Image (cartoon, rainbow, N blue to C red; front, side, top):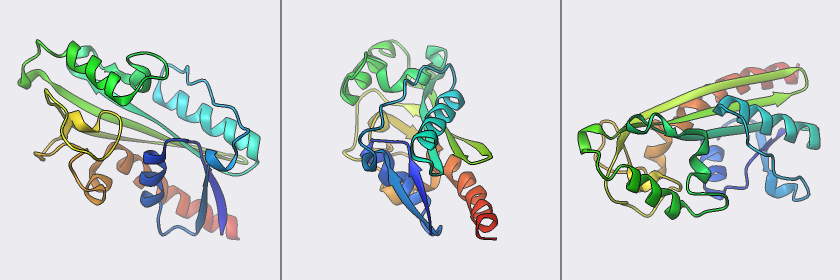
Length: 201
């Protein structure tokens, strides 16, 4: 069984990605297992830049294959903001609630028909001689008040297309079939299956 390090200290994300990669012959470690490794400054202009930067840094520090992702919310009426700034939209080291409140303030004069949005996720895998990225997108709509207790981030405000519940209201097993992260890591899982077969030879 090959050990792969996941570049996150977000417990919600760790839970989701571990579930998405279940069935692979891997042991998933995370940044929690390497507390001395410093945080990576996510200053890239795209999700792909940030995901690769995190995976490269973790691979370099641990010498183990590394997985990272960068994801965020893109709102059409806000010119695709918050985008790569999703986690710190209301400022550095702020709560999910603060980010959600800022988003709702910026959309207060936008009617329901103009609140189209999408979550985007880029997953990156880095190992010796290997770099791979995959992208997943989930379209939906931003509602005018938070709903639900599950998920994290903007999940209480985001209703995916063809559903009437927010990501925070949907069971994890449902979210993990339709989310941006599910789509990115679904493709990554297929890649990793082939990578692991090659590694065993």
